[in-house]
Image 1 (cartoon, helix red, strand yellow):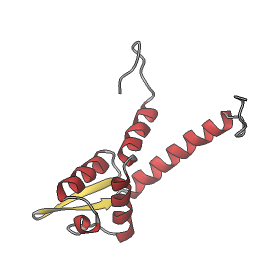
Image 2: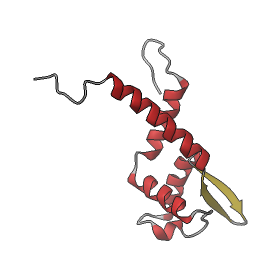
Image 3: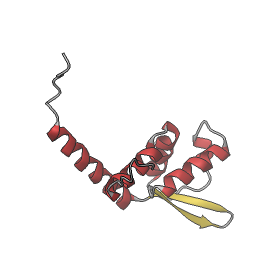
Image 4: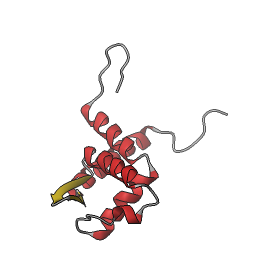
Length: 114
């Protein structure tokens, strides 16, 4: 992420921004939900569940894996994907903490522009 005037961001915010980027596509959200619904590793059927080309599904899985939201395990000629439940819990808590802090600083939803 580019900063201005040598500014650096807290590691927690950089991590959350990377996760938010990974989640910022409906296809990736749908993939994550499909993998989580299986409650086990999913190998070959992900492409059949998605209205996307195999190469697009692979790219989306790569983004989710880089964000740490899914793990890929090689099983012969294919890779099986599982949700990383601990990472999801960690990310959920981090977002909840951030949003909680932001909500506490707000004005209760009142519009002060008018």
